[in-house]
Length: 238
Image 1 (cartoon, one colour):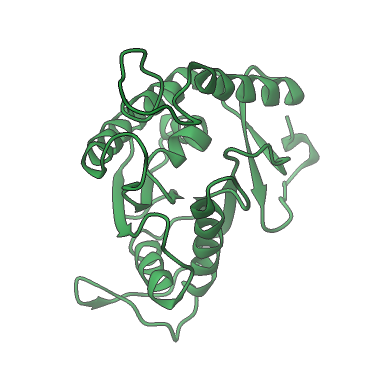
Image 2 (tube, rainbow, N blue to C red; image 1 turned 90 degrees about the vertical axis):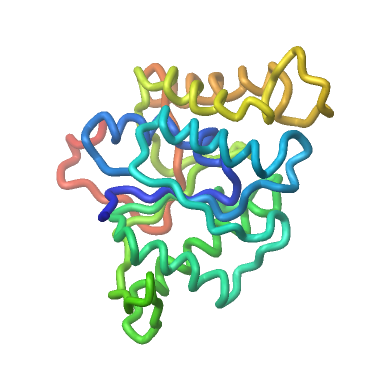
């Protein structure tokens, strides 16, 4: 299956927290979108790898994803090397996305910056003819996505582009809340974490509302880019 967008995150829930509104909007327009999780998030303080697996599957249904795969890299300890790059390249060549979303270029969690660079490098290398990968024993053709966009996570990085997601915040928040073990639950007996407070939910909505305010819409999500964004007409800008 060829995808229009492949969103890649170091952990299950990275995508939902950062660019689920953009994904929901594009799915609503008929685009084929998939998600690749690099790890199972097994080092997370709350929940388990198994609960994350189910939560990720539930979120995928909410967002209308065509596929969701997990490479099972070691949470906290994967590195940007040939072995890991080849695994990401295999998935990129398998689904041939026009656009790849990946982790923030810099963030509080060390896996986010590592994942960002790993995926960015893999997107470039995936286009090289002399790098051979196989899927189910079949040699894959080279494929390089047209665009790589980095979503924004914990840190307030200034975006290069902002996507109007007005009308899609409910879907975004429902996909986030699919991760029941990770986020606010007044009845939970698990240890508190920086993302388990009620205030953290509020911060997701506030960021989207504030960025929306800056571009003249109700809600928005921001991305940084690796090359100049281009438009066909100056009137393409909202």
